[in-house]
Length: 222
Image (cartoon, rainbow, N blue to C red; front, top):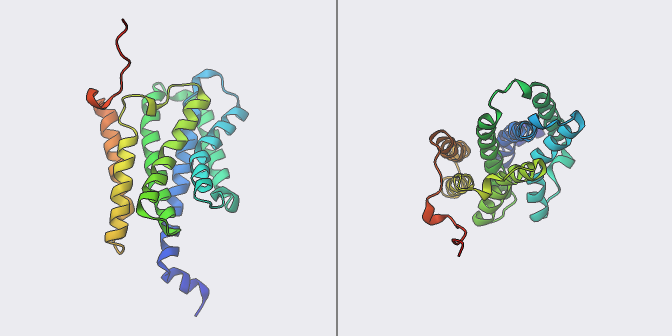
């Protein structure tokens, strides 16, 4: 039989193909948020490219270096092209956003959900344990946003009371549990994505924050 037939019957290959397009979409979304974060601050086109590409690829690169894998964009330069395209698109049309920050939060939630689930899936396919997959999923989901905020000189969402990392953690845990307990379930990735994006989007829409008893506050001045 032909090699292509065998590959279509290989579950690992099928998972990789399925998540490849999610990774591409997440790459474009994170690149867009990287540029929109500083659209109003006089960013030039080269700076937009650098910021968008670093934002989109930074979290996944850190993940791959930690688990000892070859950085994903080296073997497939399409990730860089997609990130660059997203950055340029945001650079040229970002000025039409009258309220970019709120849209940025929803785009960030979308990108974080896509990257977190695909990262956890990649780690599982490399035969790491479930806890490692969850950890790498969270790191990848928040990594791009952290790099973007640091480079843009703005407060990071992680260092605020916003419900940001918690949905990513919940979605990654749900995805890994479903993959381990029901490996034939075709919608594990969609469920993990829905949890992350749904909870985060609800928090943005309702202006929800972490409760005060789970928030570290500075002691009162004496």
